[in-house]
Amino acid sequence: MKVKGLIFGACTVVALGLATPASALVFNVPGTSNNAGPFGSVFDTRSAGDEKNAGTAFNQGLYAGYSELSDARGGTFLHPIHDYPDSELFNYKARTAGRNASTAPDEPMDRDLSDADATMFQEAIERLRDGFDRGGRIEAPGPAARAQVSYDCWIEAVEDGRSGDSERCKQAFEVAMGEVEARSNYRLTELAYGTPEPAAPMATAAAAQPSNYMVYFGFDSSDLTAEGRAVLDAAIVAAQANPGAQVRMTAHADSAGQAAYNQALSEQRATSVISGLIIGGVDRGRITSEPVGETRPMVPTGDGVREPLNRVVEIDLL
Image (cartoon, rainbow, N blue to C red; front, side, top):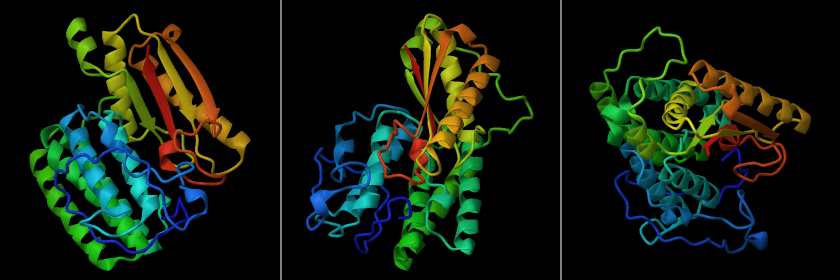
């Protein structure tokens, strides 16, 4: 895959059904220098099994799908192949979903694709997001999760040139998206962004809301995406339901480009999120912000690496 620069051979497609969570271990790769992995000193392809996976139905579906996809890429008894960089990436996504945090699909720009394939996947990801905007993650959480995991399975297989896998993953995406589109009927309104849904009564909402939110951004961008706005809206509702909580933000950038530029980019991303919180009714005095640029990545990488999981503003309610 492009962002890791390492490929460890061909693999077969994973069946995107529910999987039994794998046990947690760190996978040592034979024949590599110091067993080095792209996210750390060793390849971590199994730690998602540590997560309790008690989030939304959509995130539970992502957890199951990404866990199984990670197993297939990392090599199991049923899938004796070894593509450790992608296995680790999918394990990371499973862990993130298991923690009920926002888990984004791969952007076409983050994969090494031809122009034609990049256009095809841009259309596919926009279709996926449109289904989510129309309520797919609520009205059809299982198919929505399968659609996202199938999309990532498909784009990874196309990048690696595995035509059989890519066709099967594409078909799984089309089937899942058909279900999402058939069951999702939320109207896309013209209301200005920033007005959240009415909050539940304080005690109920406070017990139900998570305290950590991850707002992801596009490459070289501080503009909120549709998915980022949805996460921010959820954080606003939780902040209003917990008026005594402080809102602490940490803004990140990936390591592509100069460090000074990435520091400024993380500051711009923080500003975008702060503005959204204030528009949504959160008092500015409750908000603290720490833009850290590329210095504290969520996913450790080398310099100059485009890593979508590092283009994020963390929001913690304390």
